[in-house]
Image 1 (cartoon, rainbow, N blue to C red):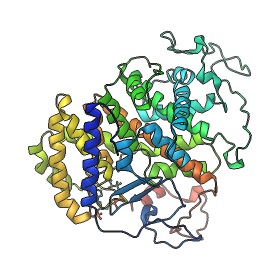
Image 2 (cartoon, rainbow, N blue to C red):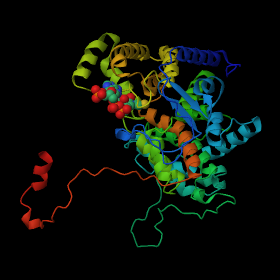
Image 3 (cartoon, helix red, strand yellow):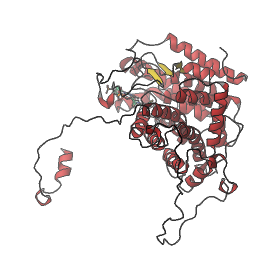
Image 4 (spheres, rainbow, N blue to C red):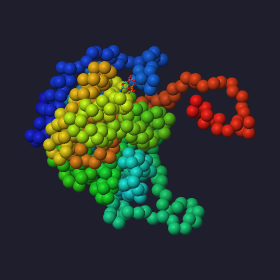
Length: 480
Ligand code: COA
């Protein structure tokens, strides 16, 4: 099969991915029991803390084999998808279950192009102090506001009236100067009635249709790009009709058409992060969707879960960690101190992978490929490889701790000149495909998630009136 991309630079990237795939096949670890058979409910499994080992549902969306270091989307190895495919094609695959024909892909791309233009949402988002809040918080606000605007076929998003398009004077929205208790304060978002389309199953009548998924997949890229610019005191840029998803995303962030190589690198990074089993943010999205809330709230909770430093927030922390270490020579002393303080090494370890994360196998060589492009990046990359060697030779052997997806992604984005606070939002721009695909799938046989906790507190206490409780009894108990 021919590797994707006619340009010599993009061919180089595809060849690098195929070499990483070959290495992964050679070095795959001990086989684990395959979790690839239908579940007969109720299922018996051994559950550890943090729901480790729990089987929450069946899925055909994707599969992670932690001991072999294999990642599969809808039956296709992620290495092959990186080498031969694009993010649009992979998103279609995740949502629909099969690779698109040329016609289906063209229609899907045109739907994404239509939803990529979010003038109302961007305009409203600009009324928040985006420069002062966490970029993921801004993304979450933007996602909620996308919901305010959506109709089942929101033609306005596709064809905005000129007066609603983003202009330089739209740095504020009108507000009441003297609240008079009007029924609708003029700063309220107008709500539009949504007509339910025919043939939508009852569990999907709350905006959880495929159109909303496309709206979110296209929209999160626009929002993230706009947030990146607003944080640099620049105005958001409208998408460029002729560009694909990855290229548009870079263009809307930087204001410059990316080179074929930059576009390809972003495409590969987006493919690699698109789905990853029942990770914390996917599970969070599914829990919210299982209440029949809707896909916008579900994606909003995915964004919230992804923000944490134990999940998607790690990529930003990795770069900070490497800068703090300073040089490859400083790694041994830094590592010794970190271990003495029992600190977690950011970008290492995984609940499922007990071998190299296949995504790190691609991102590592990509980071190396790009390292010479910016001052300081070569040193960071060399520091990263020294840290990798140290961790793998100690914690790898001892605790099966290896680099994960976040270890090299920040170096890749940093080499492309993207600011660190936008690394985790980029993760969300990709993972939204997995969130939406898994939510859609789960809703076909929805059952609200409701595990139980084992109660280990006391029972049968007698109520003590407040005047008889003494002073600071609660804080004494907490200290003891
Ligand atoms: N650095 C040092 N030690 C680590 C570690 C890391 N990054 N990750 C796990 N460990 C150690 C733990 O201290 C624990 O050791 P112990 O058995 O002696 O107590 C052991 O490995 C198991 O860790 P545990 O917390 O049970 O693993 P988990 O499955 O709950 O956690 C992560 C998985 C990803 C949250 C964890 O590896 C981590 O915090 N990594 C750093 C953050 C990160 O890179 N996140 C991105 C994930 S894609």
